[in-house]
Length: 103
Image (cartoon, rainbow, N blue to C red; front, top):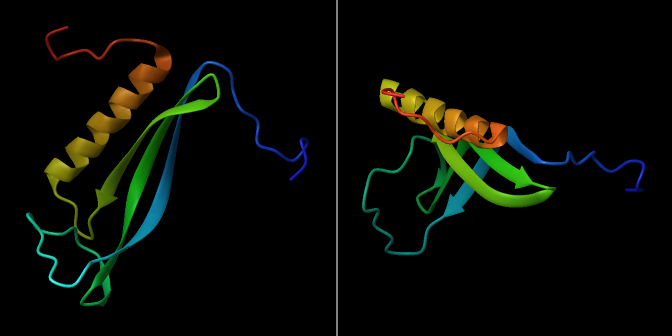
């Protein structure tokens, strides 16, 4: 990739939101502390599932990355969690502190 082909990096704060598919393999004898997200099992020792990656950049440098799994049949709580993560990221991008319902 040449300098002309490279993606444009915006100055200041900005947020990237994208869909990502992950594949996780487990060690023998692995026992989850909580239920695993819905996904496609390739075998008994692995799981593949989709999620949304929210990456925050400041002056072109990555400062944080959050991955939110997307279940096959998301609940209202899953939707609310995603909305809150997106809201927080966009407020950060705008340089505004997070607000509560009372503000």
